[in-house]
Length: 202
Image (cartoon, rainbow, N blue to C red; front, side, top):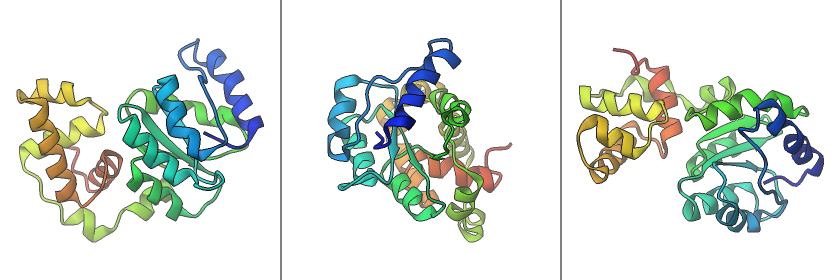
């Protein structure tokens, strides 16, 4: 979802060629209010949302997509160096953030990583997200660490349920409790904080 036609056109041309047809643009709009409806109609694996779209803006578009298409991975983008909108986007449900560069080619490696289940955040944004006291105060038991590793690896609820030998409902309940314990609002923030605090290692 981007209001810069040249940027979108660059992605349309590059993605199929550079990913051997694995990725392509299936729809685009410069209207933030229409973003969620477009995603529902096109069923993409990934939605890129420019945070600086005209009102109602990218943050609301992220939240609307998350509500109407919860399985779609949402990635926020911005040309600004201000971390505040990116943090807002993560709280609204985005699973990653990428700085908007003038060259779409630079986005390809992180976009493919996101499609593979990774959360991608620039180092500057990680620093803004992480407070030393926040990370250092986290104390997780073995089961919570196992769940957190699965979340950081981008594993689905179904996969995690199989690995932990519990129901999907139990995984959702455990994940919600873990996010509360880490004091974050989504999986991307949880993985970032855990990695910073060294909680992903044995």
